Amino acid sequence: VRARQIDALLERPEFADFWALKWSDLLHCEEKALDRKGVQVFHDWIRRSIADGKPLNEFARELLAGRGSTYSHPAANWYRALRDPQDRAEAAAQVFLGIRMKCARCHNHPFDRWTQTDYHSLAAFFSRVQYRIVENNRRDKFDKHEFDGEQIVWMDRAGETKHPVSGDVLRPLFLGADTPAFAPDADRLLSLADWIARPDNPFFARAQVNRVWYHLLGRGIIEPNDDARASNPPVNAPLLDALSKDFTAHRFDLRHLVRTIMNSRIYQLSAVPNETNRDDEANFAHALVRPLQAEQLLDALGQVTGVTPDFPGYPAGVRAGQLPGVAANRGRRQRATDGEKFLVSFGKPIRLLSCECERSEDTTLNQAFQLITGPLVNKMLSDRDNRIGRLLAAGKSNADIVEEFYLA
Image (cartoon, rainbow, N blue to C red; front, side, top):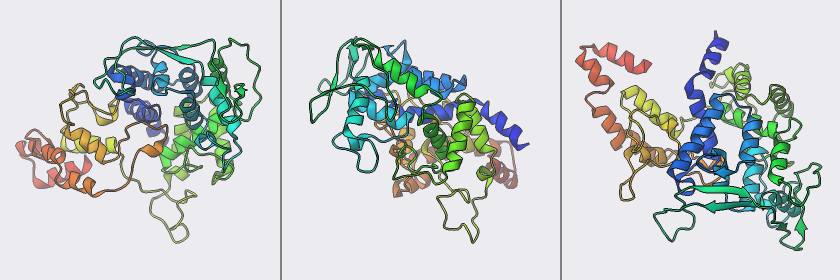
């Protein structure tokens, strides 16, 4: 019965909604760099890829090789948000390989094997990414980071990365792997995309398995989940290896990976500890109690009360977990809605980093005020057409009302 229920849940539209939200957080799907239309088409492409079961390595390949109009070729929006080779290299390593390279930008990595040369040799793959800004209708003419209008991402035939110390021109090199020689006008990005998507890539499957494990169990097998290095080994290397091999053998199928973890004994463990595992939070000896994230909490409140918050620019009834970007579609002089303020209070990220760490799960006094006296919750409770209003109008008893609220 449990396995059948998991299979049914994997086919629900909320599965694609959730993972589109997670990938949008990582891929800088926000309005300032991408503009409103760019956010919409990029999010639609991400969600459609997940709903259609696109293998995650093909998803990564299309992002890394993306080019063309950011409106008609949505994957190109990832480059629109990352404007220089170093930012692109750091994001690619962190998101697709689970490696934080930032420390090696200015010197050899103090806690890993990567050198400054490794860092800038990876950045050399991205040195020929160029932009043609078709139009830019930004509201603040002095803000060089704001874009509003179509852009074309294209590959130049020239452009090199130099070592910041020696000044030597660096040949593009894969991380820790043999790299073929490139012709002077070769498309380096396609080669990098192919290498990252290859089944024998030593990093990709492990990074994605660890990320999914983190989202399902609250902690990565490597923690933080995008910081794999010699000085931060997995707490259970055989487990990570086995899941990575199985994920690769099943063609990088996200649903298969989620199904495998959710059917496991470890996922079904109780959150109630015993005397032997009470203080253990690293080895998955018991389930970790976690708060609902911002979008989940707001959608849960809407489901219980029967009142959905309004998000300007989106159809009535759209859930917080379905929002493509960060901000609602409102005019410059319009203040943030109560729904937006609620999401910010509970940790929704502004999507300027390629890291899940940008999403805050810290408990704050403001969150307590939002739930006790906040305008959004009070509006939900006072709406005449909410769940309790309908139940009262139907003449339900107090016991029936309490039961329905509990079940909701």
